[in-house]
Each structure stands twice: as structure tokens, then as C-alpha cells.
Length: 390
Image 1 (cartoon, rainbow, N blue to C red):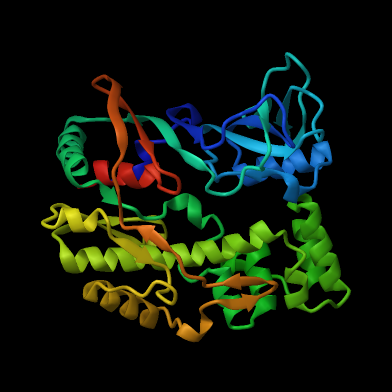
Image 2 (cartoon, helix red, strand yellow):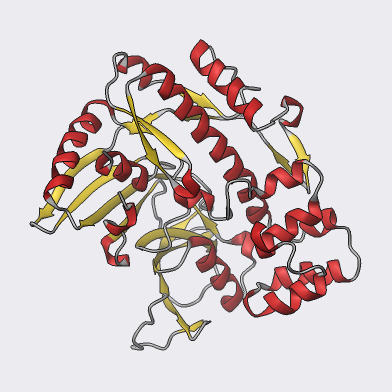
């Protein structure tokens, strides 16, 4: 099945509304704005706000990353007096972002912020109740309808595996192209070349000067500063620290998310009847078709490394041990400090998700629109894969 031939044909087919965890006040140390965007990633929108409104990037708070190719609504915080206007629109005209004039027709890529209230605390990552999704599935032919309704019964009974979705792997160009893996091996120069060029092109340009000339038109200011520092002779490890911390952290998140998906998939393949579904980069995801111990599974949490939260489940232990061995992960790398940040840290993530308030909004012979709520950190595209796969 060509997954994206059925969803996200247009940004309007994929609508995401953040359900905030904070209550808005009439006054406070931070101003809260609703950020509504189309064809723009959260990080890009925040960087544009920082650049055009001259607000330090680190002072803009947000709870999570929303899909780029979609219509999304979420909340951000800035220091109380950082933005004077109640509403501002931003538009991309011929590759250049600018503040749009009132009444101006929006370009294909745009976003706007609108004042929503105040808070005494900034919004931080994970600071939300969940997300409401309204999604149109197109080309909903007869054979797909049969699969959909059969899979929907499984999801209603047992939920779906809590894999990380495509959005988490934005920096991955190929299967081995995890920047963190190079960093862990001390190959910082190679890691930076992969960052700027992608793994396939790292041997086409030999000098930082060449990379700067080729990439300059699309670089952020901090990326230009980084390359200029490398040209002057700064060591690659020190140059890495010029990248904003939230960018560096994403390298860690991408690799650990990949490991989590592999561990969860291996666990499911050992414990339950399953179907195998192709994911990005030809990775495989495993979806159970039946669960005999649902009361146990619904409470199971998968650790990222097991250092702080060692697993008690023997099957989970085996799965983690195998995946770490296959990926050549030495436990000595856990909690390592690299380029000014701690990486390969432990934590826990629920093995499965139960969607809330699932309903069919509308349907025709050609398409169907569904709506549901997922908790923070869970991915609608994973639920859709569970519903639409064989």
C-alpha cells in the first residue's frame, strides 16, 4: 500500500489541534499565542518568529512539534512584552519569509500567531493534554474499506503500538544516517558534513568553504556562523555547540526513537500474532492482530536504555539486548556527554496507545474523514498505518 496516496494529499486533509495543559490568564510573565500554520514545521515557524520579531530563540516556548504538511494549531509563549501586536501573519514569497500585510492573500506556505492570554510559566516540551486530529483518507476503495473496519475493531479492543512516527526522523536521510552515531564515535567532522549535505553527498564537497558556497542560500544565520567558524579552523566538536541546543537534542531523539521502535517491534513479534508494515527508509513496524494479555500490555512501559529503568519482563530484556547488539550500542555510551549535551539517557514510554473519542465524521464512496484524540507524543500516522495496513 502506498500510504501517502491516501493521506496528506493536501494540507487541509490533515488537521491537528493542540489541547493545552495550561489555563490562560488575564495577566502574567509570559504572553500566550496561538500558532496556526500551513506547510511549515514548528521549528521553522519558531525560528522565523525569532528572526523577524527579534526574539531570542530560547525564549520561545512550545509543547511539541506539529506536522509540516498539514493545518495545525498549537500554543507558544514569549516574554510578556516581547510582541506588541495581537495578531501577526507570516508568508513565504519566492522562498523568503516576511511579515504579511493585513488583508494580503496568503502564499502556499504561511503561519500566523494570535494572542490568547497570559501565563506565569512558559510552555515547555510535553506541556499539553493531547492533540485532536481530523483526517481525510482519500481513495477509500472497497478493498481498503474492508481492511479499515476490520483493523478498527482491533484498535478499539487493543489500541495500537506507540511507535514514533515519521516526524521524529526528519534528520534521517538513509538507514545509517543518524548524526548521533557519528558523534558517539567522535567523528564530529563527518557528523557536520552529514548535517549539511546528507550521507549520499558527503564525499562530493571536500572543504568547508565549498559547503558554505553551495549551501549559503538556504542556511540559517547560526549555520552560517558555524561554517565560518570551521573555515577559520575551529574544531568540529566545538563548532557543533554553535547549533541551538534544541537542534542538537533532535539528533539524540531521532536515534533513540529509532532504537525504541526496533525494541517495541521485536517485543511484539515475540509475544503476539502480528502483521509487518513497511515504514520510512524500508524500516519495518510490527502491529499485533490479537492480544491475550491486554491488561498487562496496556500498562507496559518500554525503557529507552534500561540503565535507570531496568526491564523486568524477560522477553523485553531479550529484545533490548538483541537490538543494542545489532546496532553496536555499548552500554558505556549511556548518559554520555557529547558536544555540550547528555545523550543516550533513559526514560520510559508506554508500549501502546488507546485513541480517545474516535469517530467517523463523514464518508463517501471516495473518501472518509475520521477524528480522534491522542495523548502527547503519540502519532496519528502510526494509528493510520494500523488502520490501513493489510
